[in-house]
Image: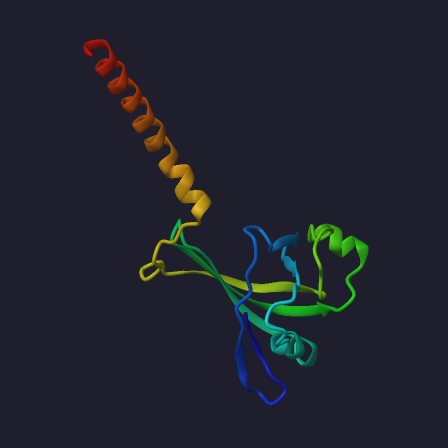
Amino acid sequence: MATVSESGWPYVQHKGGEPGFVKILGPTRIGWAERSGNRQYLGTGNIVAGSKVAAIFVDYPTLTRLKIRGTATYHPDPSPELIEALEADNLRVDGAIAIDVAATAWNCPKYITPRYTTAQIDAGVQPLRDRIADLEARLDALRTATG
């Protein structure tokens, strides 16, 4: 997420979390629960000082990238309704960010390197593991039968 400081300098900060941590709050509104990271709240401070933001969302497995521009609001003490909408009930929350999206653009996927989580790789490899186990069982049965 990119923000701009009071002195006019741009600042870019990685925002990340579990898949789906960014929630749709309305037709043109998204948000997420702020969680403690490196405890450098420069982006949050910039939002408080001036609300313009830009962000890039990348889905590495599908090689898609979405850019957004909008106006952000920082909620230091999010309401119970916002916490519920962000599905952050069980999280230690250091506030919440809501962005009213003003513009979006799909970005060229040319230089996105596919990346996969361990769970995605495990799911893709499991049929191969099952097939190997089946073939090994058949081979053992043949060895026993021809003994």
